[in-house]
Length: 400
Ligand SMILES: Cc1ncc(COP(=O)(O)O)c(C=O)c1O
Image (cartoon, rainbow, N blue to C red; front, side, top):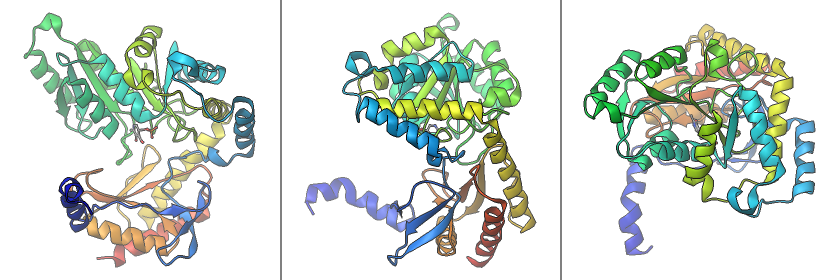
């Protein structure tokens, strides 16, 4: 290996191997669904109950949606051929954005190629180096990267601690000329590694009282929270944030990110968000698939209800088996192990037993907070979930 490449990469790789944070990928040889087959280290193909998917509603496998996407490929081809502002903007993109706005109850929406790009592009367009961003300490990496790119002054508040948020806003307001103060509060709606929810009613109050813009990231809330899966505002029955981010890659089971809000916000992002402007538009067939899948959620609220029922069943089954978990308000159920090596060992034992739950480690979560992150799907059967709960309890007891 070249000496220069060693200088850039070797220490980081060695350190990751030494502290059990080295990342590799498992190979799945069947489509994403509640039951999958993966290639095991010994070369065998083994069936697994999948408790790790973001495809919460299991829409990736609905026949009519697969056929609709195939039809869209036949109609629109394999790629978009240009950026949205050059030649890439096709009817499916526009239809998708109109439907997102309707689904989210907003004036307008704009799509990005990923949720990551939506966060990075939106925050860095809205904020500059003279602005203040108030960010929950457990926010997703894409929010953190957006803040870094914006060069705004960032104040991290303690996780979901509204008093601490008010404290940092007061501190920031004292730093600049009050007339020039521009502050953005930003938070995940559902925290991706803990599964708990942001306190939207309180955030709305604090944003209003302090003249801040409020942005929430509904990556794990869209299609999941609220009676019909419309997200955090539907869950609480309250007003919306000024800026709602979402992804089309999780419960919607396609790809892409979006921002929904007032027309003026969307016009601004179309003009200023660099991750929207300087990239090729998503394939029209992907936009069509995302739109079809969202319509499906709209007309099948019972799918969202099944998901909620499964979460309740699974948390109760784990508690009954003596595993320390709380009833999750979302579909993410963290089983905190602590030690990185032990979390890896338990995850491997579960995989051998046919249950796929990855160990989440630093830097995705804090050091010493390694966990099994279970996430549920609407199509898991109670039998699968009960089996998983029993096997997990056993593995947690045995791996010491
Ligand atoms: C909270 C949160 N925001 C944004 C993203 C990024 O979305 P995408 O996968 O569409 O890039 C993710 C996950 O990937 C997430 O968990």
